[in-house]
Length: 386
Image (tube, rainbow, N blue to C red; front, side, top):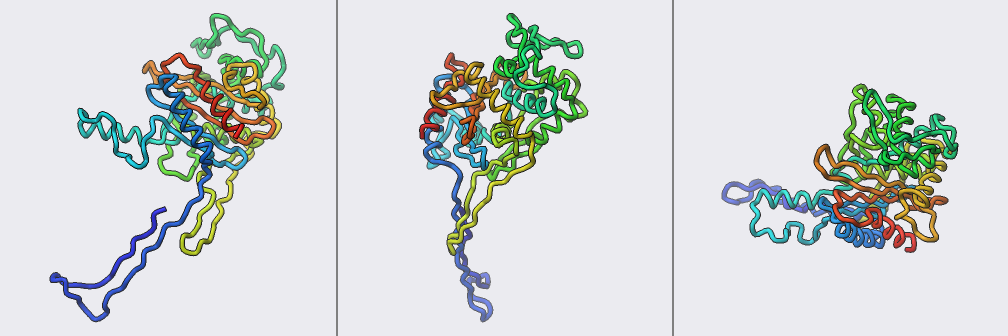
């Protein structure tokens, strides 16, 4: 990292002549400390390769971001955005001859922006993991496999507003909580949100870290965008319960699923694990940082089991990797109101028995016909084998 420049301190008059008899003082430069990052270069290389392929295959007009995190200690193993830029030529813009300075500045700022920590988005159905965790922890549901505990009729009416299931034309019918998560059934999670209530739901938003920044050790982290608790009515609570009409950052989402994978104990993300003094060579280890027990170990184990079912039998089948037990959840949401753009994402954990990696793939406005979560499958396969 950058140190401090050296300099010479002396007094002179306007003619450049020395004043006084004290002479001059030489101040030596101080070298910057060395940082050892949590980034694994092999994993980072894999991620950078496949995020570009995913954007091209899915024709993502607004790019993508990917984060991989070790849920056991908060280490960020990889973080990448696309489109990216050459760090050796950060001001280079292709085909910029006809652009004015304002246009160039806008393009550069977009390229330099770290979407993984500085941009917010609607997480969509990935956020159902929060609702499921909260409902299980509060004892609102008897367990994950009580067949017939829920029934999807294609929609649910909340305060005079009918909110449809994505499969309203052919309702899911009788479901357990596990099946509801596998089917990504909106009415079930709306009902759970209503039973949890606004006050208690916001408590879990706070516990999972969605009402504050994660504090990751890099500049530019944005905060989430939620309605104030006192302004949340039945309809607003319903939409929050299945992941829409609010915005969070990717780093908050990966921290949430890492907390579940860490046996329910909040884990803070970090990028620096050691600082070495460049002069004395003294090493200072940065210890992993943990927060409160957000949900019990039993609840966390249950949620991971349901996430495994999502990948093995439900909407996340594209993330299957032969020989490995993977849990995950897919999500699709609008990118703002009336924009016609969408965000698709996959959030996952591997392996279920001993989680060593959490992954979040976020594609901004994919307009192609590719399998949107296919990129997650390829990345996980490469990383797990490595």
